[in-house]
Length: 258
Length: 308
Image (cartoon, rainbow over all chains, first blue to last red; front, side, top):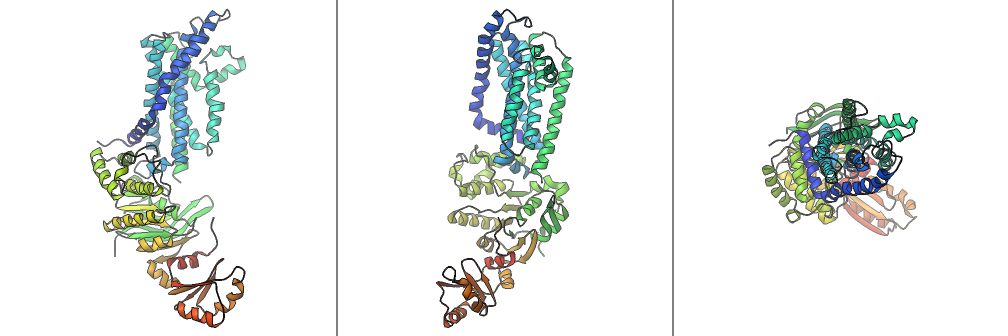
């Protein structure tokens, strides 16, 4: 069977993953357990017992779990689109090897993002199962939160790929995690509603893709309704994904086809 | 007249203000080994990348396998094999997996690829390493694997950028032997190198590039005849005394080259000149008479200044 061009890249990524999956598989299963135990159960006891929890009308674990689901999709996508992409461009130059074949930059980007979509589906599915086991959601609601989590991850995968293709020095990757991914992880409504943020900071939080992802996941998992129209969030994340894919293709072409 | 697989006219490549390839013409014929020789930065790799249909040309015309790289890149690349300067193998994967993935990039079926891999591993003398990860392999093995990878699609033409740079002599000879076999099987080879012995061993025809231009073209033999005397006498003097002998020596040969460590006298009869040197009472530390090589041509044409 002759595979479509991007599917050939996807297949190669899957094969590389099969060699290196053990470490990431452990984190796929263990991370949600650790986070939900520490934050949801441990910290959650304090939060739920506290007197001033006027903004939360539900157990902290339940509040936290869908937010963490979206945030996990983000960190997984950012991880897979940063250092491995830099390796392909600069360290191992495996992208050059791909481009010497009939495949082009679009196929490379398509295959890369396609593979990440599969990875994200798996990771968030496992996460939703762990959420269910912890009793944070029912199984149906947990599963309902998987597609928006994948979409959130895809927006980050595409944007981070474009960013990685743009930067020359890998130090900017660490800076991206330090000044981009980590603050988003902490302040996009994952751990607390962004109404808790100072007023001037709230619009910033609303503009971040992760907040929209968290909002979608939480809305679907908890059936609590949405702060903004969910289709606006879906449209925003989809638009960022498309934008990121276009920028990735453009930047990689500039970098590799010169 | 043999069929041209690659034909370039007034070909050039610019990176901003930098002119990497400056208005060159050449033809590569089916079945030959064609070499690009030149110091670092001469434009060899840029030329190779244009032939490989990965780098767009900046000026002139280029036809590869009868097609235009600008519009038919994927079709050209489907029929080419490429061995880049960096091996760019997937080091986490096994030898077998590297070849399998690459075959899949070309859209080959698993069955075809597996048959091909058996052949190629034998050809590259890597059968026993089939299941080894790539990372711990020796430089020579990685190089042979990269060549095997470049052959996975049974290409008509194989492009090799500095195939033996960094390899030890045994590994180089083994590689030359494999390349020679490919040629015998009818594969057209294009190589870049800055090793003169490699060019003399392998190339039917070659061009010498310098600063983006072709400064000479022809077979190794013809180039030596055209640009050098038959023989060379190499004299080595104690440090610091070389200059004082340069004057009288210059009169004895058709041309002299004064290197940092030696004086080279170009002549058609090196032994006669050696006698002459002795008769004049000039006593070098050592004397070597030898036939002229491509290296003499190369140094003569591209100058002796070091290119970093």
